[in-house]
Length: 428
Image 1 (spheres, helix red, strand yellow):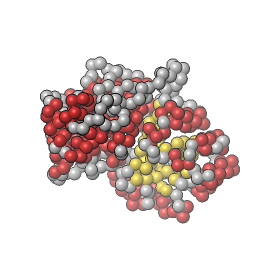
Image 2: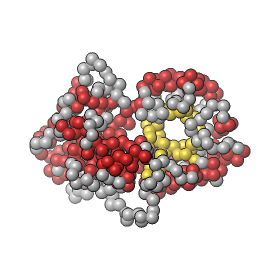
Image 3: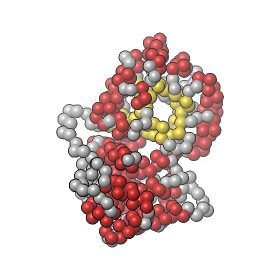
Image 4: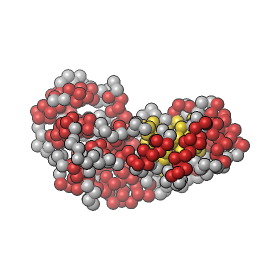
């Protein structure tokens, strides 16, 4: 999942030798687990054993072991989770063999799925892991099942709200409150379910609800949003000159500071310190500076949605750009912007048509964002499948886009590393 960046301000270290063909590609996706305010608590890591699998079809213990080794050794756990807990599935052999102790206690939450047979050896293993400070979760938990005897040793209980009757879903936090566990609502697809489960006592949530727009009918766009939307529009004018770009960035003090911090970061191979916006634009060129400024404008617009929306939009933008680099017929810059704007409706609380109204995107880019079939839409759809871990859809959409699943994996992990490097630059 790693490709060499093209024409970007932030560059990754040179990649090592390509793995041998016999070595399976690293196919890992992640799903955010959010708190009630939309902040990321951790990420569940989804694994695909081989490029030809449509799901995780390897034997459970092998697949779980590969998640651990691939996440830690091949990709880097910090790249995948940005320092937050990784939720990883463990099968019975891995639980009882104490393989979890290979990771530090704070790095991960180990999930026991509903298909793990709970016997004396599993209970004893969970008791020991709990005593050592490891956090355990019951995934796809079924009330009244044998897994209830593990309650004294688990920190999280995950309830699939689509497979459990809603009255029971809403009653379970009260039932298990004496155990002091954190209740996680899984597969939350709508705001209504999110609000209902939050009110019932769930404190963590997993699902696609956070990236779906809550339409604010009849409300004017806030002034600061309108300002950043105008700036985003100006930044992406085709005829934008270096002097105009410099002037646009200087209009916003925070944006100017971000640009200077970025170009002066250790990740950039510049031979002298950049002390002005003019220096930055001249040395790096219009394209990378325009992309970074667009990213930060969009992040400023996302004041009403989950902070994860901005992260996800950034990952989509970079992934689209990297995939487009393998497709000579597509413009990498345009696909970057398409990925960046793909969550604009959720950020603004407006329909995509309204969100795009004041952006001077090409007709093809606008139609792509509105869902019309096109080569660019095929690339975007393949990225959406990859980020969700929908492995069957990955193969279909990759074929439609004219790329391989391996290219999508490279792009996704490359985007994660790129975004992680940006986060570190921001925090300096």
